[in-house]
Image 1 (tube, rainbow, N blue to C red):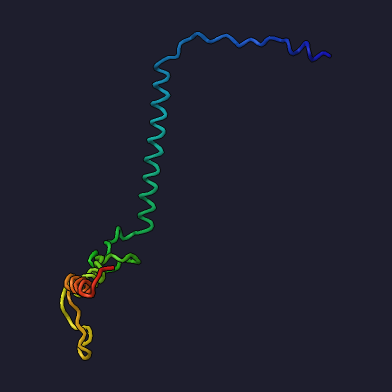
Image 2: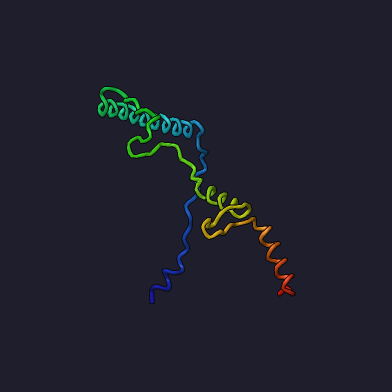
Length: 131
């Protein structure tokens, strides 16, 4: 087939251009790009200023008082620390390490845990043996 002849064609790369790149040309391209970029930035800023004047012709409004508990839908009040768990724990510790009535009519009292443990241990020893 004739395809075999075409596959043996050698491709040569074109010769390099040996002329050096001018530094002034590169600097001019970079400088021109910066000028165009600056033009667009200033133009965009001017458009934003015009739009702001159009949306609020009376000028910027003062924000509502920051001392209010709620601004728009954001609750800005101080967060209160919930101490109920600490109070309950302290009550339990006082009951565990103190004296008090459980049922006054029935004559039931509570005693400190250390004293109750000592009493139970001594009663077990008096009965004749520890388990």
